[in-house]
Image (tube, rainbow, N blue to C red; front, top):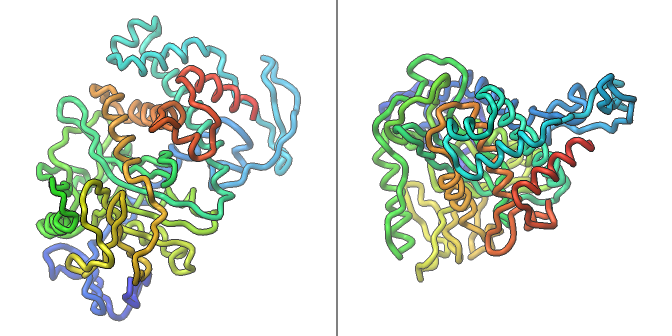
Length: 439
């Protein structure tokens, strides 16, 4: 961060193509860093795919003027008659486009699919007991995901008027049956633990074999069992040093999921943090607390470069740690002499700002990502073998976790001010359906 080349794409002090450390990188002669080359076209294509899935699956509003939740403003509309089937039509006040409000007629079938997820039934069993054909079961599963995702994003637009937003991001390996699995990044709002965004490494795109995940080694940093916080941090630095390069994040031998490809986890970081700009683009200032993982550092900095330069944003490493007696107050650790502080939920290292005395950090809930991961791990059907089903199920469970799962008495949505009650899953379905059909 102190290097004059921070955020500079072209500099005379760069060696654009260096293999000094045994991998293809751009070397900065000012600070000595060697960030590895990233396939920009791969990131661009998968980013567009994830952007479409996360924010463009709108069933409400004028999609010509506002194709994305959070990113584009939704203009006002007025009633404009009915279709021949009796469905309400509306007319956009900005572009005069006429559109039809969503009409989910078979709510009973949607609830049958929801119940099958809650009971954790195998897909084949769920389809058989539902009385639906396989095609209709997956059709309603997709509709259910659309209902919950639209409901969630509509409510999340309230966050964009905030003066401040704090976020906490960590990655997890979600293991499935038959040695299948996926790596995903999760981001939560720091006060409530509300899950804002989840991005996994599966894609429908085809890339050259060298860019497709084929590994057996595992370089995930593991927390050692110790009550000594400094010892835990130093162990994580040492684990990173054993990699071929600091961003070499690989998660073991995973068998492929059908009809899709898995990209390397480090690329997911560049995609995920770009998507997070949907939440940070309009708020006043924001803090981003990222897992103490070298792979995430450069991606988080690149995505927030403009905001960091204009002092709108700060990025911190964070390591959850509870139970030790040691307190870090500006302790220098690691190969870059990173400065670490600690409080009751863990250790913090400012990446984008200098702190000389023991600061007060806004992150006071260090277990949000772990809580959601444990919820997913217990809830998800481990035999799923379809990217589309995974996408749908993850979005459904995100809504159910945020609105239906109390942590210490209150749901994340209540704590964030997006809900005034704890819903049962079927109640949340009724509320979501009512809200999006009224838009």
